[in-house]
Length: 287
Image 1 (cartoon, rainbow, N blue to C red):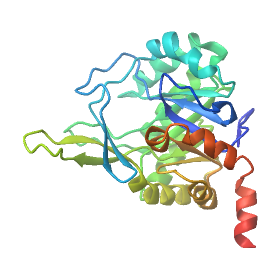
Image 2: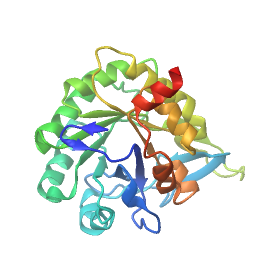
Image 3: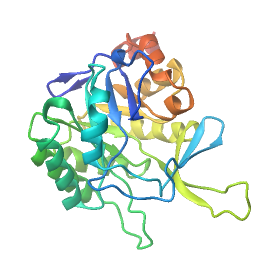
């Protein structure tokens, strides 16, 4: 996969990497994406708010603690960089000034340690009913691009909305994105077995998300206005799942839930799928 001047050696990438990553052949990966961080730490009701709610399906709590960009840079980034593959910092913010601030910090502090950032775009989680628009995506992407400069890779990760993802992607492209990622989490609710416990709001990942994410990749890949490469992400557990995303138009994939449920899965799939490209998949499919 080509990301500006950067070429990924493998279509398999690790997303939401744990801070204590180790024990597998991660040097074979195409890239490592960090957990999503904010400029300042965001306290939450849960330190590790992840529930397995169905077979190979996780719910990630909205009110999970979020680490700060400063802690990431000072304590965790060197360990993630030791594998010798590109590292991207996943960032989010409540508004354009927040994206600008965290991008400015990353441009100043880690320097050449990172290959770029992933701009995690999500619907505001409030009761005000704000709409997520293509203009917001464009402005957030542009703010990050302006701070990082023209050489850094900027990947924009979009919500799992097949009806709207094309317009949001066009906003990212206009803002200077290098690539797109489809998708982030699907809003959902978990009811604990304890009937006295409060419902847990969060986002689905894993098996339940895959059909929706595949449709989103398909939508992006079949829009002639969009020229950016695509990361497929959501419910990848086997080489066949990787192939499915490439068949739909992705150039590479990100694995997060699969690694959480089966540590080392990403490294294993990197070995199994190193030869895969969208071109080889298309050729095999047509034959």
